[in-house]
Image 1 (cartoon, rainbow, N blue to C red):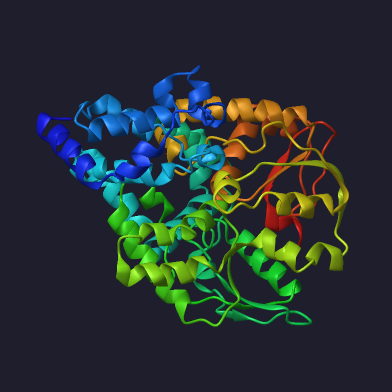
Image 2 (cartoon, rainbow, N blue to C red):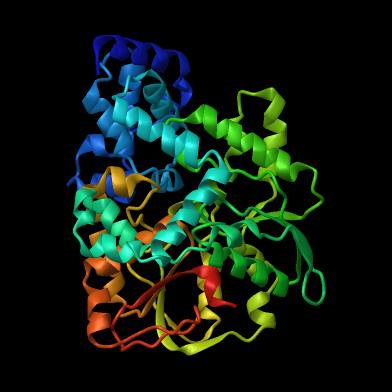
Length: 457
């Protein structure tokens, strides 16, 4: 980072950062025992929310140069928002974090490789759904054609970072480009119509996790929901908002608001905690834009997670839910819990299933270390957090982990690989059946992690 960049960042912090929020932190320390990076660092103050706020304030006041170390500290935050959920002063930490990252990102002169990577990811892939569809279609060919076998058995994968290799191992079997494009736009309720909902399909959820989306739609129909799935939807923009690409985030948010705003629906349903949480903060994204703020507030007022509407419509009471005897535990999606305030409903649904013994894991509410691109960009810290998480999971003796966010799902699968449980499963000849809700496992051997919605259809 050169001196010109440092000067510009300091000036923009003074002009754009919310001074009230910077001053609002009382330094009480309530956030400290809830912050994963503070804990992993062994109690390093600059790895805590209040420490990062103090550094932001110092930069805005001209007391600190925003050098490369400052940028590193800001980017090492997971953004899990456990701090906001316990803050007695109501500090809007995520707003400060995203503004800080946006200022840094828009001021920094990145190297050519970094520029290219950011352009491909943020502007080429996640911003254009057609490109995402094509990418997942290509991934389907990679998985089905034998290319995956070649890549894994010829040493080619050694050329890639270990974090990417670990992720590749746990990717689900994705659908073809044709299957991705052949999506419904309207579905009737089964039986009595109890609600009319719009469905936010997401980018990765409707491509890489298309099975979960299809089962979500079936669940909503069974629960008595008529479903509208409007065209023109975009990525929720969480990955952009959290990574300093706020202008692009606003562009995509506008597309989503327009897609749903003329629909006569009771709710807009999401099935991914990270997506739902960012959708719920569109009004904050447009708080300084009078033209879009009211439209965003109306949109936000209708956002609801799939687990919440299932409980509200008493799905688990009206239908007898049954699985083979097994022990389950639940891993909270940070944003589903801390932003959408949805944590009892998934547990209530799991506990209602006959044959399931539900065991709450210690610190189920803490981050698993996924956090969007964090597990790739900050792999060492991410894996430390995951290893601690897996110890708590294994203590439950669960055979199934359930979660409610695609990033969490992949991260927990990485955890299973790291614990050597996938290899042990193969060695013992234990296989799970093709039907997504059934599995065969030995007691005390963790063999599966699945999205919440996939259990009920």
